[in-house]
Amino acid sequence: MPAVEELKTPEYLRHLQQQDTDQSLWEVGASCNFLIAAARLGMSCGAVANLGDDVYGEYLLDILEAEGVSHFQPLAPTAFNEQLRETLLCFVLIDSLSAHAFCSRYDFGPWPLLPGVDCLPADVHKVLQASRAMFVAGCCFDELPPAVIMEAVHSHRSTGGAVFFDPGPRSLTFRDPERKKALHALLDSTDVVLMTEEEAEAVTEISDAEEAAWSILDRPGAVTQWCVIKLGGEGALLCAKSPRRRYRQSSLQVDVADTVGCGDSFAAAVLMGFTRGHSIPATLALANAVGGATAMGKGAGRNVATLEAVQGLLQREATGASEQPVVCTSSEDQQIVSGQPLAHEALSILQQSVNRHSWRRSSSGGHHGMRELTQGVQ
Image 1 (cartoon, rainbow, N blue to C red):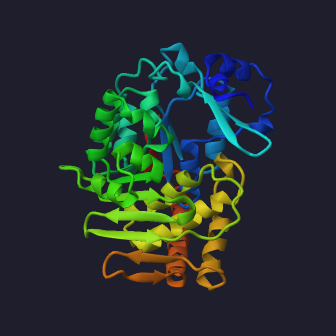
Image 2: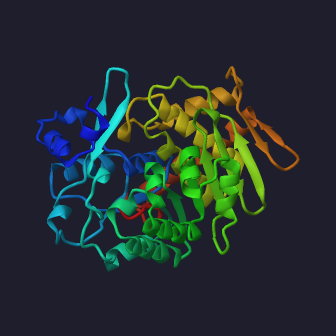
């Protein structure tokens, strides 16, 4: 694998694009991880995004359709700029020790990566306003002007939709003054913020995870209700505004093959728990199971958690077969909820969701009315 300074260059990207790559090595990723996990959990979901008029765009649409993602809304009605005709690609390089490195236009621009998109067409507003939840990834700020992202957020919120935001690996780019201003505007309009410990420190400049979470919730005028800090092998921390309470859940014990996509699939379960009003401990139990099941497989996209793998992990917890049972602690009198009842509740939530999704599809002939989730502009 080449050195980073050689890897993160336009020249090396062109070199990779000229390679005759076997399609068996292709995979969807990034926000598609989230969409596929959400669909497998029984949510009706769609995407607002830009795809090029090329073989990669066709491939991605075919995968999403096969995974049950019910709708794709083009970001721009026509490709009025040549760069909009090309699907954004990211090359993942893996060395003999399974270390990952990435090469894409996200690393060197020019930004925004989707030039000329200065406002959203009416069809996009219709999709956003007909959805109950909207998920925005931090990489959107590489692709679009902040004003367009906020236009989407305000449009979605105008009909009572909930906004979820995960700054992701691009968190460090928000130190730029212009991006920082845009970040603050989005945080103020977001119902649930999800971050890793490292991302939380980059966004808030606070090293303690819990303090960082409270700083997000305590922003004057912010609508944020939950701030979730993903702790990897240590589980997850969730701070809630009303009632003001802190929850910490330990992780499931799994054989980790690859952590790519774990945070994306975890976020899908958190969104389902929040929008459907499930208890926070059960939501965290389900999210940890989804993230853990993803970690057991290699790669992202279609390799994120399957329904069967999530059910298997929760059933193991529910029957007490786990060597290290999961617990959830709450700041209210240090209340502790053990893994078995949590796993039972999470299994019930999952089964209800899958049954509901199956009934909705059969009763509508495979077509959905109001979507629960729209993947944000991208």
